Image 1: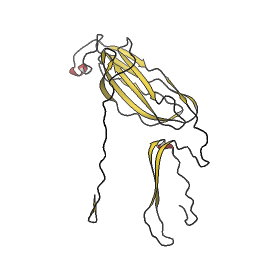
Image 2: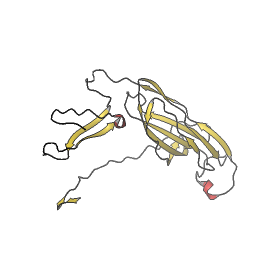
Image 3: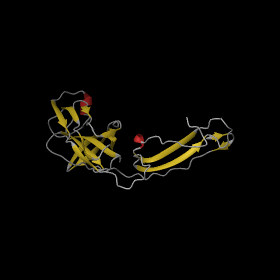
Image 4: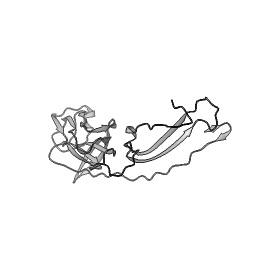
Length: 220
């Protein structure tokens, strides 16, 4: 960015990218299954957790499934991501996995339950899994309708450690904070805008705006 003849340039960022694991747990005789997992499985109150819902295909579908995400009482929840599909390995079998994710934040100590995800699917072929996109060709095939559900997942939410400072207001995570103002000098009775920038990994959506108490200023 060039501002007033001065060029400003951000430093480069280096990312180390590793291959995702292609292994898929579970299995069974059903041609399609729904699997939900939580990480970490035993969070503290206010600690973000990742919920993954995976539709595992061992047979081809006749059309896109009709999917209902799991209910998450006891959690603050963000919107689930758009579905992403990839091939995985489940035991000796190659499967197609469609995954969607969301971040949850537990709100109280105790056991909270992520309910069952539900999907209605039409199985295009009763035989072994072949091409999961074969239904796009428009050919006729036998169809079998199924409604599948994932098992509910119980999450043991731990209380926060004791000894928090008196001013603690529920922020859980690793954060950096920085104050800034729109000017360094001003005159009396001229408004100054200040900004608090909070960044990091944690329950940012649930943070409260801190009170700004300054004897030398009237706060609006």
